[in-house]
Image (cartoon, rainbow, N blue to C red; front, side, top):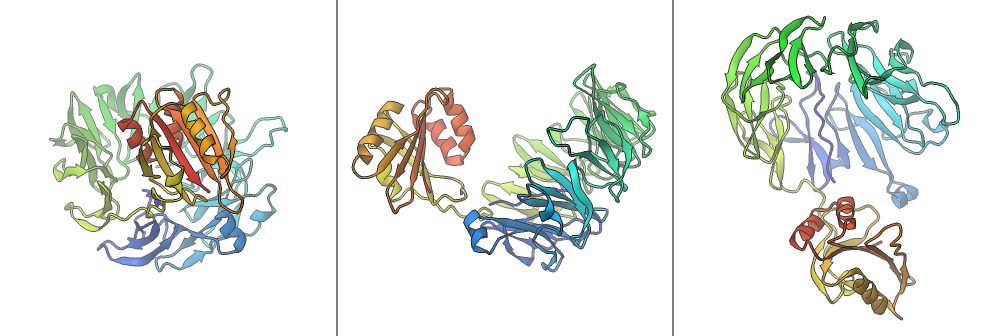
Length: 486
């Protein structure tokens, strides 16, 4: 079980970083010391001094349905907002479950995951401030949040779309809005449905007036560092928050804005330079490969499939050696090398790491499932991730074809177990579906596909476990299957 690594934290955060040890999540400080012991099912970055965590329910019903609950903790690891739905939530028709977003400007998004999906907002005490009345909602930025109203499918009429204030009242409304990332530096990029093309974008101010009307540019980035990246026909330029040209389109092949700070990366003919919001050159970058966006004065680089970092002078600070690398935040960056995950400092040294990030594999190739593997099995491996409500599961490949496999299970189960053949070649061609049961025992499910058919691609993608992918690559022409004990 992995945690969610997010990257939106403010300068006022307590400097705590989420970790996982065998699927249990906690927090370390900037020195790598564990300050909140791993005990949560999920842990997110702190935002405005609070962090979303998830715990398992404790009632018999919770355990039966594996129900979990989110709440917010403070830097001491204690709940500030308890892991339960806010008061009033259960009054919503069709309520099923809920989830929280991170805090932004004192409010966090609350999502009610019923048939329609409804969003509202809670304060730092977990009290409803804006009732869940929106089909979707974004985070607050500069006092406003983008929302779309909910409307039952059987009630005609347009949805309301636009920006609400912290009381939940519309202050900017336009039915043509399609998407936005919210306000930044007094401006917001809005994408609109357009008759001329699939979507168009424009830049509005806090009154909802267009600073850059739709159709002027194909792409507009949200303002950051005092400038905005724009593009037409794949060619890029830079404008200020009022739309005035800082760098004409076409001067550079690519311009990349920072996550934060004021350093933009511009490329031309494979050479990268660092520029500010006015287009002034700040330095050159020796690295000629992929360069990420600057955050906290550092940016990722990629060379020969490995990741490292440069600083805001363009100098390589950490040589590429990681399989994956996140931006720096508060002096640390989350990286991966093989099975090892952890946080490094600005010198590239690990302050904390583990090769036991994921929950240990519960499943193995052992009895009783091995007794249900066909005689023609070429290779079998444990399922490489844990499924809810599954006791055991293995993946396997066999010689022969699907019909031979189907016939083997019918013989194997005859008189010993009950076998329900649910195979339907009309709706799922190239796949068998068998259910095996015996009174008083858990039931087994067998799914398999012929590796040379189109069905195999969808089958492997659906189950998408590492060991199944490995078996498919090793034995591409053979029948691949999965045996599950529930």
